Every structure is written in C-alpha cells, then in structure tokens.
Length: 64
Image 1: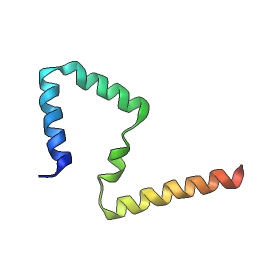
Image 2: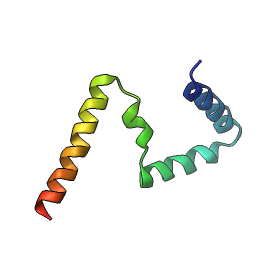
Image 3: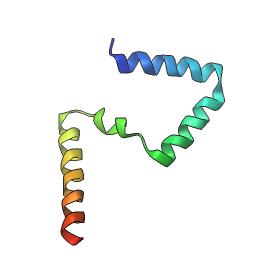
Image 4: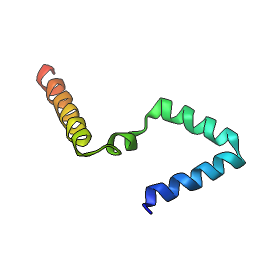
C-alpha cells in the first residue's frame, strides 16, 4: 500500500474521532491550497500543470 494511502486512512480515522479537525483542515486548505492535489493525477496532468506553472512564471517575468 502506498504511503499516501496509509496516511489518508489514518486521517479519515482521526476525522471520525474528532470531526472539527476535518473542518480546520478544510479551512486551512482553502486558504493555503492543497499542492499535493496537483501531483495526484497521471502523467498528462503533471505535464500540463508544469507547463502552466512555467508559462505563468515566464509571463510574469516578461511583463515585469
């Protein structure tokens, strides 16, 4: 089993014990964002995400 899957199962069990932890995590992710979600996709999603980030940086540097 993948380490990430084990961590998610532990987190689900913790959410069942303390439901306000889930609420706090949701608020934190809405403010900070979940960067791990960008890398959970397949190869094509990773390539597109990388291109968008690099393209955004290039546009930012070009117009600066």
